[in-house]
Image (tube, rainbow, N blue to C red; front, side, top):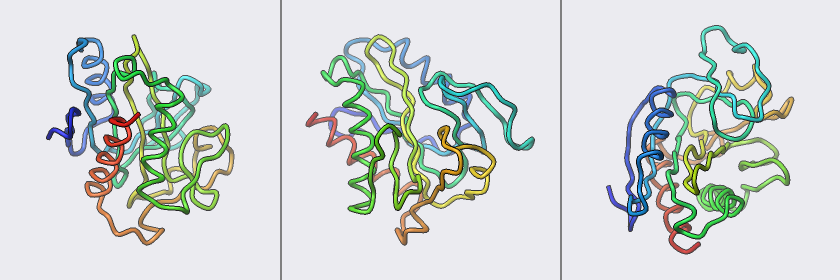
Length: 202
């Protein structure tokens, strides 16, 4: 699907390692004329460690642990979470990394409304102090990959076994618990369209 000049791909459920490898291959192979893409998908249960995270064992033996090349600390992905991978040529668009992070957060805030907010020094989006969206990106040669994850309708229990994004005791929430009646695909689709508008006007 083409949203303006950005390709939206709906990949369903995809293992984390498979998606990560595909992102790296896409980024390495793209040229100055390659359209930007947003990949909307879900992951089977997995903990991922960002570049800022300390090495550790999987908090739950039944859930895989992957050390990724994205920024940030440890987080959890699982069914019921809308994952948007944003393969965007920041250099071509003239967008700084800091501004891109702001745009990702703003897309979530626009979707959720006035109760959603940022926290200084803690990337992501929060509602009443609880984290509802995490983000982490990697930029190579001016081109970003990875992206953000919005909790929609999922089992939040695996978050309790970690310090989400490196913050001990950080509460997490999801759109379902806020009374927002959107499926994962609906939430991801709306979020993607909001983000595309922001990128086109950045």
